[in-house]
Image (cartoon, rainbow, N blue to C red; front, side, top):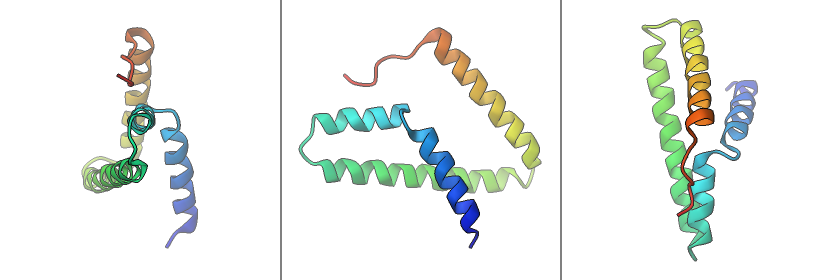
Length: 95
């Protein structure tokens, strides 16, 4: 098991998730509910499942497309989403 890779992945995902829409949505749901453990479990399972899908999809795509191209494509996508969000804005997460 590659502990350096585990730690690097943890830090990257943890930092990426801070303040994102998923965290804000979970925050809003939690503010209006009494069952905090249910919200935590639902959010945790959703994050684990979406991560599993990303790992499986990434592994499959990397068999066809070189990882360096995937990184470039992901970078371009992040920049495009950032520009889109900056200029078109987003609707509030909390109802």
